[in-house]
Amino acid sequence: MTAQTDASGSVTTVYQVTGMSCGHCEGSVSGEISQIPGVSSVKAVASTGEVTVVSEAPLDDEAVRAAVDEAGFELAGKA
Image (cartoon, rainbow, N blue to C red):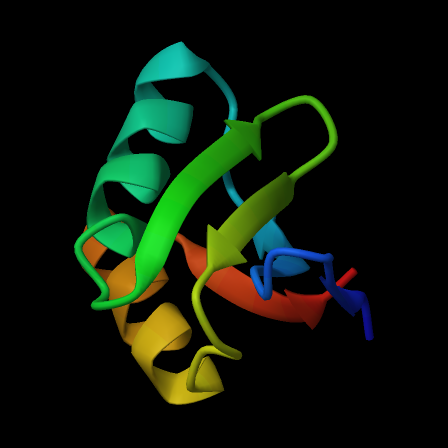
């Protein structure tokens, strides 16, 4: 599991998402996850399948899974 809390209290979590292959995919996943309350930034990288999320507090894994599903991809877990 990759989740770190920085000095400002923000939590950074890296998730592994399968099925992303292009910038449009990255945008879809980022857009859906960014709608979760408390999320301040999302960076998806199709080439690695990693999605880095910065939030005010640890996120509910099921909320992240639902957002990734809504974007049309699969959450494989935390990187």
